[in-house]
Image (cartoon, rainbow, N blue to C red; front, side, top):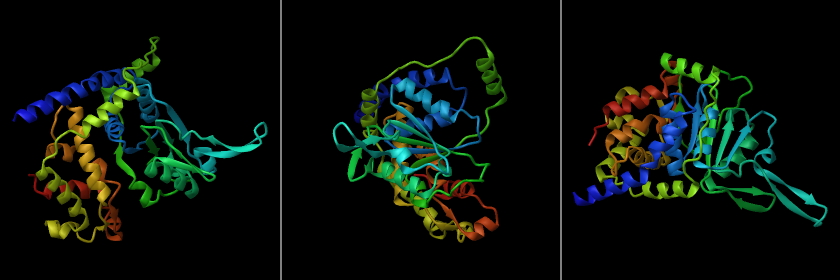
Length: 328
């Protein structure tokens, strides 16, 4: 019990700055607290985040504001059908003064990269981004360049406009730790947005922490305790998406073509730790896993033709899995 108390005190100390950080972001962003929290989970764990929402929901502003508050290097890349890999990662140019070829690094060399409308870029650009996301490096010419630490890709995609878009490869979608779906603000939040954006008072966020403080918090997240029974619960949930009949989910049999990969199990454990850390708690509970489960799993389940014909969504499947799988 003493160890748990000591761990809780340690986590409470290490995570205390998060309240101030989110309050500072709240000066600029109205509502959208789930999105802000999920982006923080990505920053604390080094996980990439895919954000899906209609235009005008402050996706770009949220990422840019977080970079200001953390004093991190931010880069925004607008993905378009004519985007080239060199526009993203950089290229090799000839230096007349030195008489040699040198690498000109692209905008991906930043701590937080906003890949705006990621599904508009062609396959070659997606391949270049895939190496960066997985290996934390890019290859320009014959030379490999390490990306800065931390390096997080925050990608956005528009769910309502499909013309001129490319379906993201399953291998790339799987690299995103979480896929966040955000909706419209409430009536009260919308009133607040009007007040802030049409008044004379200009609101902006200021730096609260540096990258070293964030790295320290990331190390502390790894110390958050996760019980063996919670690990078994994570595995049970993931296995239920692969073989639903074995877990008593006979109604889902035939609706899932492919279940979640082992990356889902890793992401659930990491995100569960960060979720507990944000709440200043030194241990993970099944409720942490349930809270972040839909964001970790929804994009990793490939539906069958039968599911599409019956208009069953991945959201419904994930919800059903968490309803049935026994909580320790």
